[in-house]
Length: 164
Image 1 (cartoon, one colour):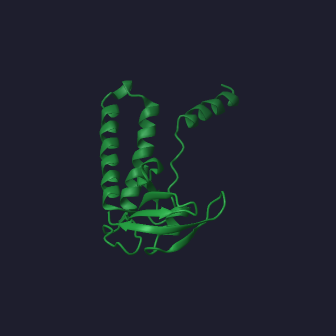
Image 2: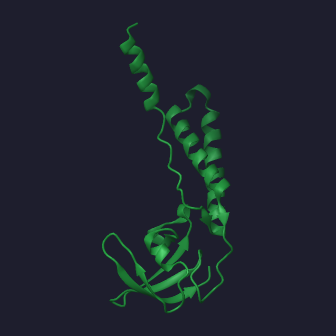
């Protein structure tokens, strides 16, 4: 067998390996709800993995490799999670707080500061370490803060803080 064919075989085997999910270097602060979601995701992936493994030779090898990768990622996230106490303050923005803010056009928006894995902008769940999250974290009621955005800085005012 030519050496060229051996290299092709190795390349094909490597192509089947999924790219590892990148783990953030930020502290993994999570709300109690976010921690429960991480644990549920691990349980779901373990069940899916067990289901694929039971198929033996009929198992979808690529699906199994993807499940292994995702399971490693979420188990690491559960292991590194630092659960923050439920936000209770109505005076100071904390991780878990619901915050209503207004921009210079008096447009109001309501968001909750959450951990990275719980963030979902469409539902108003903002990562605490995002530019908006960093601008709001620690702000007090009626504070004006600078939201440093790639599209240009914006001054926003904290008009309401609600506990989680």
